[in-house]
Amino acid sequence: MRKFIIDTDTASDDAVALVMALQDPEIDLRAITVVAGNVPLNQAVQNALYTVELCGKDTPVYSGCAKPILRDLETAQDVHGADGMGDIGLPLAGRAPAPGHAVDVLRQVIRENAGDITLVTLGPLTNVALALLREPELAAHVAHCYIMGGIGEGHGNVTPSAEFNIWVDPEAAKIVFESGMKMTMVGWDISWKYATFDPGQAAEIREIGTPLAKFVVDIQATLTEYAIESSHLAGFDLPDPVTMAVALDPGIATCRDYRVDVTTGDGLQRGITVVDVLGVMGRGPQMTVATGVDRAAFVDILKRSVSRPV
Ligand code: RIB
Ligand code: CA
Image (cartoon, rainbow, N blue to C red; front, side):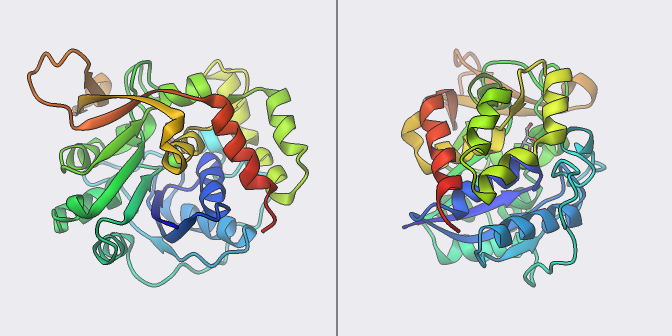
C-alpha cells in the first residue's frame, strides 16, 4: 500500500481525482485536507465529504485556509458552478469535517509517516505553504509531492501565462517551490493536451454505467460549457485527475527536471511559473516537470476507478 494525503479545493475535477485515489486498492489515503480556491472553503469541504461518502469510505476530511496568505480569495465558480459540482442539484451540505485544522493535520500526518507519504496537491498551495513555514523539516519527510499547477510548456487559463492554482496564491506557491520538497509539477498544459474529453469520450465513461461513472461525468456540466466556450476545447478537461494518474503511476508521464520560479506581482506578473528550460539563470533544477502523458494509460486508470464497486 502507498500512503497518500491529498490537499484539494474540491470542485468538479478535484472530485474525480479523489474518486481515483479512494477507489485504488493500492492507496492508503490517510487524510483529505481542504483549501479555498474553486469555491469558498466550506463548499469545498462539503464537496469532498460528499465524494468520500459516495465512494463508501470514511477517509477523514479536514477544513483548512479560507483565503490565500496575502490576497483576497478569487474563486472559479464561473468555471465549475456555484456549488463547484456542476450545479446539478447534488445534496452538498450538512456533513461535518473531522476536527482539527488542515495545516496541523498536514504536519501531523507527514511527520508520522516521514519518508513514506505522497502528497498530492489539487488546489492553491496555501495549506501546504503554511505547514512548511511552521515546520520546514516537513519538506524532507514528504517522499514526493505531485502538484497540479502552473504551466510547463504552454499557455495559462487565468492570464495568458498563469494557471489558476498558482495564480490564486502565488506567495504560497513560491514558498512550496522553494521548500526543497521532491516535487513533480503537472501543469494545465498537460490537461489541455492530454486530458480533454469530447462528448463521445465523456459518454464512453458514463456508459460504464456505475453510479461513480455517471457522477464523474455529470458534475462536469458547468466545466463543459466553460471549456468549450472559453478554453476552446472539444469538451471538459480534467487537470486534477491527470495529475492524480501521474501520482498513482508516475511511469505514464514524460518529464524533465527544471528550475521553476513563481512570480508574485500583480496583473500579468501574477502567478507565472517561470520554467528555466535552458538553465540560463545558472541555478540547478528543483522541479520535475511533466512534458507529456500517456493519455490511454490515464483514461484506463480513470475507467478502472469508476468501474470498481464501492
Ligand atoms: O487550473 C486548473 C486547476 O484549478 C484545477 O485544480 C482546478 O480544480 C482548479 O483548482
Ligand atoms: Ca483543483
